[in-house]
Picture 1 (tube, rainbow, N blue to C red):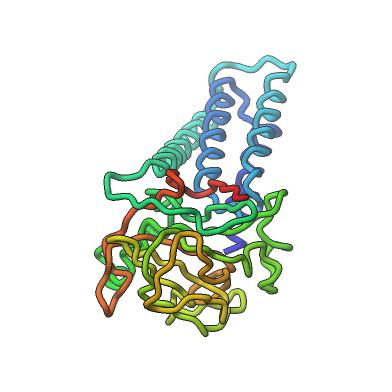
Picture 2 (picture 1 turned 90 degrees about the horizontal axis):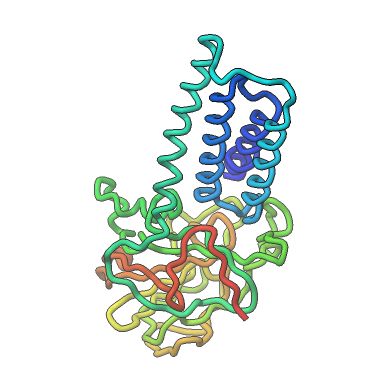
Length: 315
């Protein structure tokens, strides 16, 4: 995964900016279209990108570099024609426009993912404290929330996990925006969120509390026990799942009542987890055999619908 992130979030943006700065088209129309398309592409990458590496502030650096590239182009002393003077120039323009249409579609759809769909929403308290947290998956579009793939009824194995469709994945970041000491460290303790206490986001009853599953070593995952160590909390008429806890960290058990803010467990890397993070989702109750198959619910944390790349600072 990290290789694809490097290509999509570092190499591609820098290549687009460098192309505009160093070797732009030799006509005003081409330069204008290339600059416009590059801006759209950078916006789409900023929205869709999973900013665990490089950190969340990187798109702002790209915006500054784009402005510098445009300024360099404007200061070229030699006058250039308004239109391409060869068929190669027109082919380049057609290519930019085609790429721009694709980038625009991705940008618009990912931007629209910040708006919640017209389905019931459930209000929760944020389940973590003491620090700054980054949302990795969240929102109402598949481009910014990978969980939404489980709404695809054509895939039978997704039906058992339908309830997680509007779920969120959360990591902790330091003051510089890094979520770990290194790019993909193998030591779980190198991740900022590992071992962080998790608190009940609502008042309710513990329906299920699973502990004792091992934390997985990166990049391995547990494809059988996908939620790993987890808690299902019944709050009113909704089930709330919090998953991927550290082994032997649960301080609650099935059948007990908890109040909002009570300690549940610690963040770990159990289950189908690529790296230490907290997964949370709300749903209508599922069946006894497929507890995560209920209708998904939107979540609002302190009134806020969180999407990918949002940051939450907790005292």
